[in-house]
Length: 394
Ligand code: SF4
Image (cartoon, rainbow, N blue to C red; front, side, top):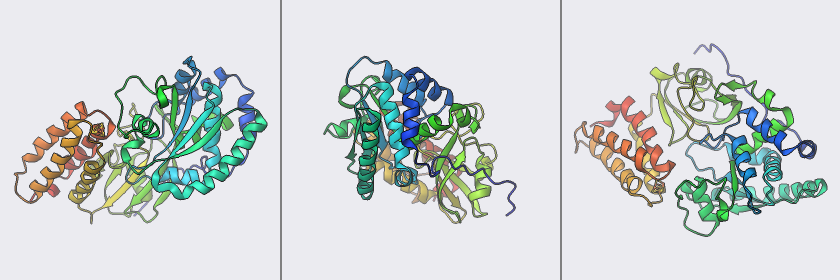
């Protein structure tokens, strides 16, 4: 395989920097307005996948007049193929905490939580050590803000922000109706900033190097770098920080094994990009320059020609059927019917045309499911069935 070019490997998030106290001091010396402008101008969008502008989120919460507010770090990383937040919390937890402190100062929060995925229990002892150091720094800087760890219990849906609040409040982890949004009515119905682990670490970078530097990377609508979890048929699996805006072709040239047939962008709830679309699909948030959005947190699963796309889809649907919270019918029944349906077509019990009915069902789910889980099942289902139909049939 001849490589035309190698993607730019960025070293901002994982750079070994231990100057949180100085960076926090520097940002505390600036006005709230200046910090918010810096965040807004950076163009940073949520790295958990939803892509909401971070600066705007902080601004809206700061404008709320409630006395009690919260900052929550969403570390409930459960999307299949995604493991980058674990690495960030292992290697640079102080940057995440610094991001939380900056946000707390601006919005006026005194309490913060790291909602940690249940399976990441092994990170707790080191995180607690880091929290002790962090609280000492905050005391020295005179900021009254404390962060605690809240353990998740293993439900994928609790990564959805409102289900996460419900679970923290001791209820079933089920998504709420929106609006109201967390900036007005989040944890305990108080204004809350909830940011993904990586988003908070980027906010540290922005405070240290400035919005201008951040925008030197990436493309319009998708500024900056992104941490990707690269897995599957690749000789170099792992965690990589790359510039947004790259084409899937460039990614495959770098990370594929020379026989890549498809790439799943954004985990099981993302899109499968087949070889014929590699060159035209770009990785980033929806915008002029990007053909593929990142509905989740930067998972890149590479499949070579030895893989059955039917098996891939079957695994995804199995996962969604299991993880659907069951609250709304389109998702609860839809996931079951999709799984049953593809099995029936594969066994020859239903004609190939039945796949078209299932595609219509995913359209209905996209329109009527209550939250992102049920809405995004359509992404992988339609991109796999439409591009690998022959592998789905008997
Ligand atoms: Fe629950 Fe699925 Fe409905 Fe979301 S879409 S509320 S996960 S049943």
